[in-house]
Image (cartoon, rainbow, N blue to C red; front, side, top):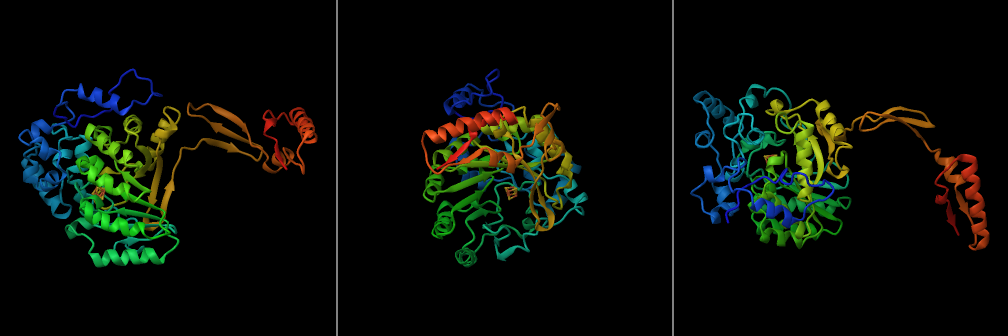
Length: 452
Ligand code: SF4
């Protein structure tokens, strides 16, 4: 049976939230879906493409849509729009996989998938706002391709090639240099730096998208990173599970599983990206022992409402992907039209908290310009605070007093240090507990600690 890129969000109306479905539940329901639902245009756009080609990531890669003319064969574009987009793509090129294109509703100019992949004239009309390199990655590059900003982490940028060119990309500045891949000498220089810096315990392999490299080439790099004794974990940053999930094949997963612990961070932004293919890709990774986390970017008109973010994050949990970060869109030139006020992100998190499992709530983060690093932003639940008490607001807006335990007093009083065990201690304990209950109203006096 042919499988369309059918979304799995909201597939099970009436199901209890606390009961995540098994994989087989998801798929049995998916398979009852008509193969060409409104969320997928595979059979409309690519009817003549065989399943073997459609399931081959290299076919998608070779057949990426990279010109406005080709794009206009799938998405209605007026002559004026085509002229505008040609101007945009001179500065910021275009690349969309057939798979990701099939998720776009061509008849909706405000389609949230379209906004991430199809250029907008605002990329050049507002391009004076922001920075080329807002995170100052060039300044923290210790050797070409290796960014070392935080003490125990380093970032390897192996290539600037990606399956799609996301319009909100932080490394948009690299696009005009064409596709590049770090040479063997450059990679060896990065590895040498990692070997010489014993404080680095976490190596992030990113890009561009590192999974554009062949599995064997990637293995030659990962295996050498794994040999560095002080590197504890390897993380891979990739958007392939979202934009070309066919890349996450058994060969890749088997290779990655050899170098455990390997973690994978991906980048779903909208619930419609959670397709059967994407779910299967994540499942293959998870079954290979590779945890999958998601880093969304908050984008105007894409996912800037609580309702969309809830559907996205709940959908991610259903495919066992952890919503990890929600990033404020960086101050990158050519992305201003997609950026939202900071308050939007805070309100989204506030709207989610209490209304869904804490597991589904990502940390909202601003990555500071000039390389200042990540700052988490949270709604303010503390209305007032003294040494004795806090005034806290809950998710429904109700206000509560909360006694602030006096650290020194309560711990010292509740801790009994005894030099020997036995009845004497038990007697002392019982006496101490009852005194505590009477004198201080401490309900949880059973937490008295005995050290012998
Ligand atoms: S996949 Fe990542 S690096 Fe590549 S264009 Fe998209 S956001 Fe940028």
